[in-house]
Length: 99
Image (cartoon, rainbow, N blue to C red; front, side):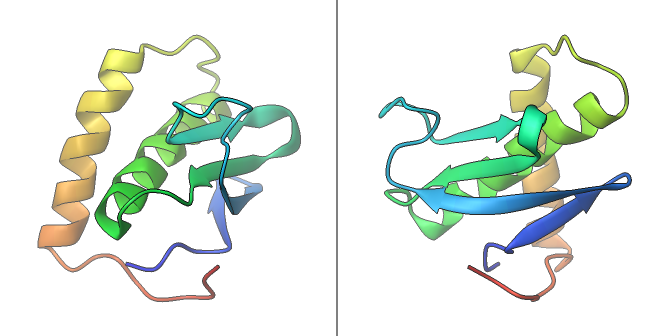
């Protein structure tokens, strides 16, 4: 899967950005910034990790846009891993405009 330039979640478009430093923290692989609708993914990750991280951050956005401002990171991690594998195993990643 190539990382898309943006994703639409509910009625909101989230811009996807690859950055060397995510959310001002070198240890972060990704971040979902709700207040200005963008997702950051670390450039230093393998393609597989970028995909996993994107799915994880998309889940944060889905929960947020569904009204869940408080989110359980363990739930997002577990569902993200399973969802990424499901999308990959069933060839449900589609090519589109990419970064």
